[in-house]
Length: 382
Image: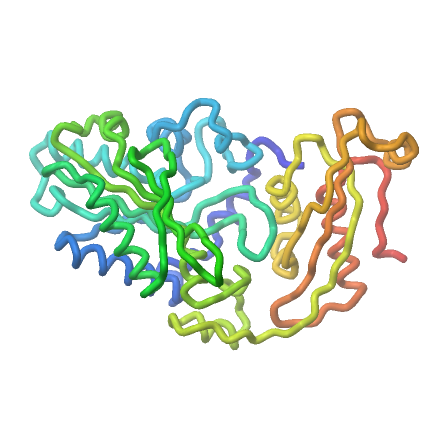
């Protein structure tokens, strides 16, 4: 359902998605969340911040190898990441910018151009990241992320500093929230933590953090005997949704004036649409290795901007070739390396009504996007 490498048109479209975290691309509440976090950290530590905004095109080395990802890490799989070529990709996380930041510090130190601010700085790396992901109320293919790395040429930063970092970020995003930090492994940190917040009776992940792995510094020739660091990565979409109590991620990009006006501040969200959902179930033939992420990516690619009408694409069941009755295999013309998936699509445009004919047209477009069998079951022409 997905090719190995992006086409020129896909690259163009991806690079032209609006970055809601960037003031240069228009005002948005996401920028207020980011400002609150950066201000809280720089005031607490009494250090400067330096923001880095770079192209979303990055080397595979910076996105994975120089951060310590193993060669067989599942995140490298082309089913989940968007590759432009064997060596270039659309970054899957803003952490991909960190190796160049470390290399720049090494160059400044060796050329004796290191100024006072460089010796202890909060490096802020916000922007879009690109993934092949499921379609539901909390996931998109181009989410926003920020990496916050404190890199210092001073006494080692340790566990107490890490807890201070986590507590400050939570308070800046969700004042007064109940939170916890649980151990979590990351390729580029040691003593890694996952930061969860309690929202509506559920623990939800807000961010991940840890002490910068000395090996990551060493790969960029930054001496870990003199340099140390703290690292935190946070999804800005989720942070904003939690702060404003938004339950549907599509709201963040809505151009409905009633919605856009509310996305200029951090006041609680006031729902503006009560349109009923339209659901369609469809039985499709898929490659056996497919999952919700690859299906979601295929649907996004096929529908383009029309994907905004989709609230979710759920996989209700998977049935492998060997488990399907012979009659069903024959009806679907199913092959041994394929499976039968039952999908449920939920359509609920944020601000417009949808007719049955329009819903059926979207249903058929989703069907054509994911179905790989020779037998088509379309309903739009009925």
